[in-house]
Amino acid sequence: MSKQIKSHVAILMANLIYGVNYVVAKGVMPDYIKPLGLVFYRVLGASILFWIFSLFLPKERVAKKDLLYIAVCAIFGVVGNQMLFLAGLNYTSPIDASIMMTVNPILVLVIASILIKEKITNRKIVGIVVGAAGAIWLIINKGEIDFSAKHFMGNIMIFLNALSYALYLVMIKPIMMKYKPVTVMKWVFVFGLIMVIPIAGNQAMQVDWGQIPTSIYLSIGYVIIFSTFVAYLCNIYALRNVKPTTVSIYIYSQPVIATVVAIILGQSDLTIIKILAAVLVFIGVYLVSIPRKKFSLKESFLFRKLIS
Image (cartoon, rainbow, N blue to C red; front, side, top):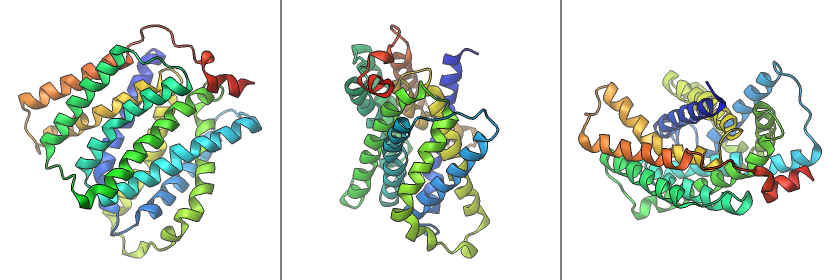
């Protein structure tokens, strides 16, 4: 397969994992582990896995100025992203959270146009609108939406999570052109762990591991291994070959994936509405991801700063 195809497969795999994570993480919090405590173990586990993985690869030295830049990316990609998502999910419903996350591609498009000079084209705007319409249509079809006052704070946190992750996707792109994915990720999570410890360490120490059933242990393992280690690695690999907006538009595939899984398991029926909504999602993804012309990252402000 070409690098482009491999990148799209990697993004799709990451979003398949994220789609399941909404329900899995919700089952862990707050009865067994509080949100910040789960963030701590998620970042700690992923840090260990990335460093172990890096031992089997050729060593790569990272310049000091790039380490500082990676630390800033960790603020948005690990600390802000994960804390806001899990804390927000604790105060809202998976359906509300799914709808709030549909703003992520819009935020990525705007931020990418400012920081790395990625052009905002009519095709991308139409693609995002069409994809969002299909995703929201599927989400609404899954259950009752409740944007009530009791979910307000949680929904705000999910929105800020989408903003934080959008900043991360755009900012990490230039550094990915200089180093291998595992090299970048191991440092992103080390810096993330250093920042998370003073904020989440207290909740992490409150966990009563003896009272946690096996099913919840498996859920925690899923969050650490798949939703963090594998998903982050898939997305960062894809960013070497595609634009940040392409990575972000795939978030609209999450409700499609969840619907397909539900149909396979016999928990939902295949309807014309679901088919049409899925078609809209795929049209949106296609419009945003097809390359109109070669994108020159070297023209961006961030890249020029990194190589100077």
